[in-house]
Every structure is written in structure tokens, then in C-alpha cells.
Length: 510
Image (cartoon, rainbow, N blue to C red; front, side):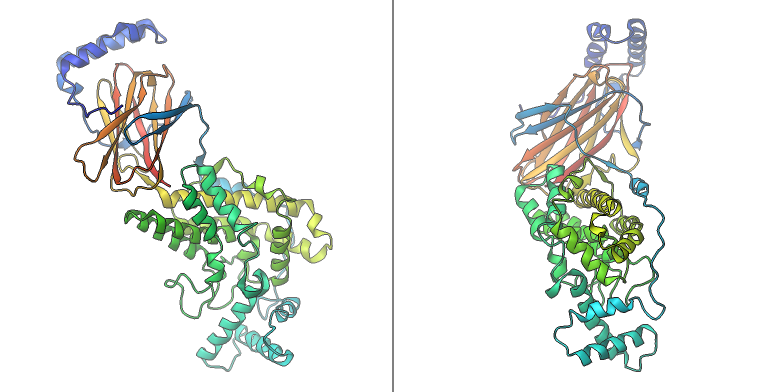
């Protein structure tokens, strides 16, 4: 049902609503509540203007309490008709990135790379196996020259050194991620699952856009010179963040920057009302965060083990239970994609020493229970960060409730929160979080305005249910709401004695 915008509530309406004794009787303490009503009536008599509808200035969010939460999921049509309502639906929620620090592995003696370069002798020998376009003599000469460059003893010009760095970079990518620069985690199984699972779990991403995430999940491996800029010329992007000092000159450590570049580019496309282009950028960017969940993207060394490890994951995806590992129920909240990407790399790097040493010394390393357990846990953490990146790119918050702010809900008043100028997609989720000591006092309307209209239309999404529960989460799904770029939340507190706040109001663009 469409509800026209209300005029300001006048004093007589407030008096009638706040003197509703039948509502007060059902509350916990009759005497206490009646005293609150009398006090509120006295204040109204002295200050009648307090009952007018007001858009309240944001204040700091209230402290959380131990009260009960009611969660409701609504699907609503473009005419305001509610199609379905699901009560107490469990919605995936974000958690602080500090939870990443809980990943731990046993102490393990690290394998130090040689002093004259980031690679060991067996790595160079392994690298020769992908130099199929060179003769044995040419391979030896190229490796000798790159070792001289690493040691600072090369007599070649800077341009000639740069050309060799470019060539060796391509060979290393081929050695660790497949010939013709084909990723070990390409399409299925691997990046496809990680990317499309993120869209499926969050629920608001359209089928078409989730397919886009999968289609672009391997794009970064076929475009090693992107994103340019900021990637410098002659630089091969290995999607890494090296934490052990073994990076290769001029072409490593662009994983976090690349992830941030595409996530922020996606937000810019949403701002331009182009969700299709935005999801292409998200698909590109998710690849980099997923790579950083692999320990071998936190080092420039151990090429032989890198290739062996990722090949094992690809060929044993089902046996390792990785589909279950990435079927997560929470995600990490991302506020800065570059910082979050580096945080994931630092965590995955913790497992490098154990996995690497085991591969190097144990012929049955694929059956090692710790290698298996760490691989599963790393995929879980990576999926949680993948979802966090998706949310970062596609979530647009009301300035009234962003950060630490909230909009207070006071007795007899109407409070508002707004999200303006956001893109529209075939499917969107509009989310509300309210903290209030008696949510049975509240009426809540979702309002929207398309480009041709000057006033909001509304649908009522809460009507004084819930009694003395303390928190209200409402998620409204809308399909095919084209040209709707402005959203409004309106909350009316109909009784005295309990107060609260709109703590969150935001839009997910699917």
C-alpha cells in the first residue's frame, strides 16, 4: 500500500497517542510506565512543539546492550506492495578485521633464500623448464645476467636491465601459475568459486552480475600489465605483497594497490549510475585479494613450491572440502581496500614457512594434516575478505548514520535518515538497523523517489510489533526499481518512556 507523506504531527495527535493506556498496560511495569506517561504529558503541555516531525542531527551511536533482536526480511514491489516477509532470518554480518589475527600456525624454521638473490639453485633449475623458447646456452646466459642484476653487478644499461627484468618476470609468472600465464586457480575450481560465492552469500547480487564476477575472476592473470596507471611501465604484476624481502626489482608488490584500484573504480562507476561497469571492476579486483590469501603471493622466492602448491589445490579442490570452507557466515568489514589486502597477506604469510618446509622435505606433504588444515582456513579467511571487498564496493550508507553517528529516536517524534543519489540495479537491498528499548512503540516507513518525482512514496515496513524487544533489523529487497536514486527512512515513536536511535541505514546495489 502506498502511503502519502505525512504532514507534521500536531499537539492533539501527540496527546491522543501518548495517553493510550491500553498500550502501556502490556508493558513490564504498570506503575513505572504510567509515571513515564504522566511525565511525558506534563512535558508536552509545557513544550508542545516537541511533538513536531523533525529530521534529527546525527549523534554518536548508542552503546550496545544485551536486549533481544528482531530480524525481518521483506520483498517489496515497486508499487509498495509487500510480497513476502521472513521473520528472524539470519543475515550475514560484518566483523572487525582484527579477527584476522586469530589465525596461528606452529613455529617452523623458515627457509632463508640465498644471499645472492631471491631464488635458490633448484628454483633457477625449475625456471629453466618454462624457458621453452630459449636454447640451453641462452637460458644459462639469461639467468647469469639476472643474478648479476640482483647482486648489483650488471654492466648493462638501465633499459637493458629493465628488458631482462621484464622477461624474467614473465617466466616466473609462467613457472608459478602455468604456461601462457594461465592461473592455477583460474575459473573452476578457484577464483570463480571464491568470487561467485561472495555474491551468492550476500544475496543482493543479481544473477547477471554474479556471472560477471565469475567471468572476470581470471581477467587479472591475462592482463599482467594492468592496472596502468598506477602500474609503472615495464612492470609485470604478480599480484603479490612480499613480506620476506625477496621481491623482484620493478615488478612485485602490486597486489594491494591493484585490489584497491578496482574496488574504488567500482564505487566511481556506481556513482555514475553504471552498475554493469562497476561489477566488471569488482570482478577484476577480487582476483587480487584472493591471490593474497595464498602464502606464495607473500614471497618472491620458492617458485617450485608455489607451482606445486597451487596445482595441488586445483586438482584436489573437492577432496580438500574447499567449497565448504568458503561457505562462510560472516565477513571482514573493509574501510580501506589496500590496508585490508595487506592485512590478509600478513596473515597468509604466517603459514608460508610450515607449508613451504613441508613441501620441500616431505614426499607425502599432500597428506600432511596441518597443510590441509591451513589451506582450508586460508580459504575461509580469503572468502571472508572477498565478501568484505564486495560489500565495500557496493554498499552506500546514509550520511546520517555513517561511521559512529546515529539518528536519535525520541518520544512522540519522527526521525529520518536518507541515502541520496545512488545507482539502481535489477536487485537492491535496503537495510535498517534500529536500537530502541521498546520497539513496539515504533512505526517505520521506507520511502523512495524516482527521477521524475518531487515527493517520496512510502511503504510501511514495521507497525508497532515486537513489544519490549530492544533491536530491530529490517532488510528490504527490491527488484527492477529503475530510476530510483533517493531513499528515505522514517521512524515514528508513538509512546513515552522509551527511546533509541537509527544506527544504520544503507543500500546494497546488486
